[in-house]
Length: 458
Image 1 (cartoon, rainbow, N blue to C red):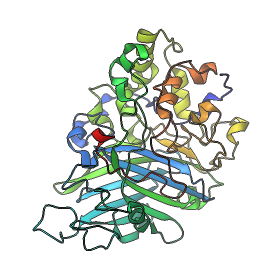
Image 2: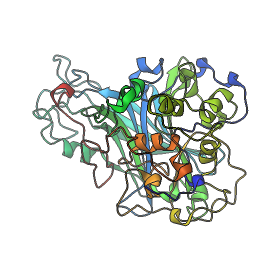
Image 3: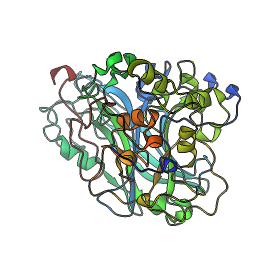
Image 4: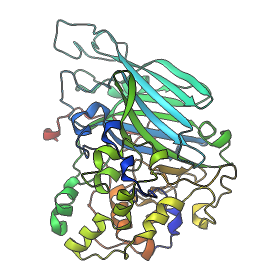
């Protein structure tokens, strides 16, 4: 398959954790832990704070808005009662946005959660009858949340008494879970929506990548390891002007997106989880870097030579050659550095026409290296999305943001093998999991409803 792609347009590629300068001392394990699907030793023991995925895309059904989602708590088996899967209290769940390219957070959407007093303490049940609404007296445990929008100019409370969609106990307990989901979506002042609650685990992939890259012979592929599991989701859909530089998407349509979790530790909050691009800490950072890496704020990414070395000589590329004879571009992999540092962002020179050239940010200083999921909001939703995103000639897909249907594993494998350099996909280099087992919704929050059948029964 021939590809004519400007490498500079592949911004934020998650296999390129590009950091400049040196000083490994920046990585300190006393400042927090890492995140994603159990890929770091410390966060593996703290699933309530384990941030698993981040999505950012132009809303396909509502022009002029952007949708941001973040998930927590990996591998939620639907039958994990009787306490199921609440959000942590005394913690902060954040979606952070940089809209001027300096790697510093300009806007934070922050959720905090509280538990209502349990309605019934004389039973072990989560609910003692069918639950037909979020206010149903049969629902014995319920969480509420506050949502704030934080900027350097101040903090605004957008929601002060939101209700979290409960865990999906089963068909008898919640005969119409779709109604509960719909009731949990709340309108925001100024236009927009928010959601907090349980959802389907929408990340589709075969995690046998950890068994010597799919068995060492690509025999262990084709099984969606996360099929049937659930996660906890927070999401916002807001006008693009709410997240753009100086409220004007035409001024700079590119935003950087990350999600973090802050845990209360004594007398202060400590960042214990960070996720921007998918699979960074899982497939780029070595075991010795994982706990410390995601404790960093993106503004402090620069200065970690140990991670630079993992990018310019990526381990995944060496494994592809070792097991499959696939030769990636020669090291040092300046193409990955260039991809990460210079894609669809301000002051990067011309952008290929099929990526909708824009007049980008003229108001801020030079782009600062940082690992973020970057989205160009000026690129409209694709009529016929391609699961391979930019590599599939679909400029609205990953790594230009991340849609729920983007096949990030295949995209990343191809990129590390050199597809953005050669203009050709490597035949057969795929985990053979191309779609989620559940269809995505057509309206906010788009992520499918949570499953209510045990994983081992599917």
